[in-house]
Length: 417
Image (cartoon, rainbow, N blue to C red):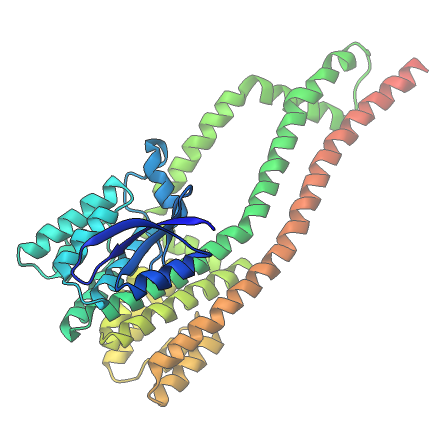
């Protein structure tokens, strides 16, 4: 029977560490709870820590402790999610905020996370509210996060609010990771295509250049073009590399300009397939975030102002300014959102129904769930078009180079004949 290491918290707030044998992590969790302990981390005796149910510490982040090469220098999104969920678990178990933060410092997986938690603990001990301590670290905690915590403090349900926040963060992370995972294959395909073409032009084609030059006959135009391009790549590859790096840096710097970013985001929204995908991703995140804010006592006006800052597409975010203005004038939320013409009609109609029926928070949650599924389908449709196009482009590129070389070889054969 496998042996598991565990870390758990007693009702008095003491951290208990030990080993138990059992058939699964779930069995260990139940045994610890029967003993009056709150499990925080569970691990195979020969492996990394596994998050107990109700926490979200990943095996990967714990393994990062063992080697400084892979330890992040800042608090990552996954670590923030783990801290949020574990803090919610401790607070809901009845521990004080000060004691809960003290325990999390001992459970921190990286120096950056431990330092952050120490700063929060010291601020709380100094008489500040947790929301004030979080607001001082806006490099880690977003405006959304700070306002959710502030609402929880005002309502006296900080543990419940943090649990909801952790659930929202997890769902948003799952959505983000699902899109990233779906794009891995196309990215690899693009890399292989570019590398293959460069390899052919820079190393294979020049092998034929001397042979062609000795033939004493004018080469076909396609062959001449391929030889010139191959020679240029061999001689100036370093200049192209520097140019690519400089171009990426310039593009990144330009992207920080609000006007440039707005134009770029508008073009992305208007792009076939990709625009639909971006809009659905943004709507799913927008609806879930706003539902979380409303569920924790934040007003609709304040919630929209906060959500605007979380939008990844500046065009969709800017459209909310007009919605907020009309909401202040008493024209409601759903109708002005529909009139922007930027948000999907299904989402705006569902929001309009939720507003009219007095169940806006519930309907926003349904919109988020619907568009989570829509994103999955949109990604599949987008890839169903992108992947064949990439494969065809790779075939045309490599086939064109090979064809140009064959034209030169055929010309040499005619000369010999």
